[in-house]
Length: 137
Ligand SMILES: CC(C)(COP(=O)(O)OP(=O)(O)OC[C@H]1O[C@@H](n2cnc3c(N)ncnc32)[C@H](O)[C@@H]1OP(=O)(O)O)[C@@H](O)C(=O)NCCC(=O)NCCS
Image 1 (cartoon, rainbow, N blue to C red):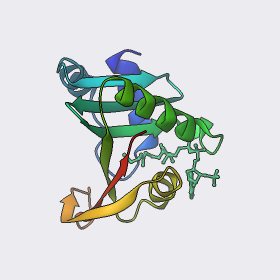
Image 2 (cartoon, rainbow, N blue to C red; image 1 turned 180 degrees about the vertical axis):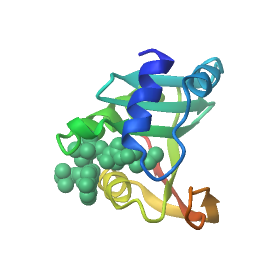
Image 3 (cartoon, rainbow, N blue to C red; image 1 turned 60 degrees about the vertical axis):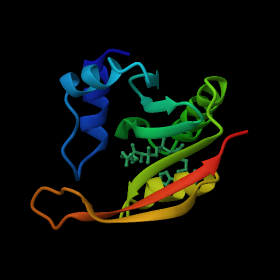
């Protein structure tokens, strides 16, 4: 996937927060700890540093949501993180993002932290973040 393809899917999927630009994806992916997998329908960007993995973003294009793509992509990036040496994974999610909270809970993540007013929202109050973690097999 190119940074532009990621930015296009990201902008279509994220309606409440500022989407990441192609330049931001390119910059992220230039970091040796950052990895991406998926396609224009659904993709994930994650970091692996030593034994820790972190999901930076996951997005499914609205045309393809509710078809199991994010669940499949979660399994793929976690398997790749494990292959690269990670033993646990963390992520953060907006407290009002019910689809993502449900996805992460069903993928075995449990709440481990809270960041008040962490996410900036356009024309709305900042939103709290819930931090979640799980062990990787
Ligand atoms: C969250 C998101 C990635 C889910 O993608 P998806 O491909 O539609 O998800 P899946 O079809 O694989 O669904 C897997 C699980 O996620 C949850 N889920 C997905 N969409 C949901 C919805 N609209 N409402 C409630 N739960 C939902 C369910 O638990 C679902 O399992 P089920 O089908 O057995 O009920 C997608 O809605 C999206 O891109 N949202 C915008 C971006 C975002 O919020 N990313 C995550 C924060 S970084």
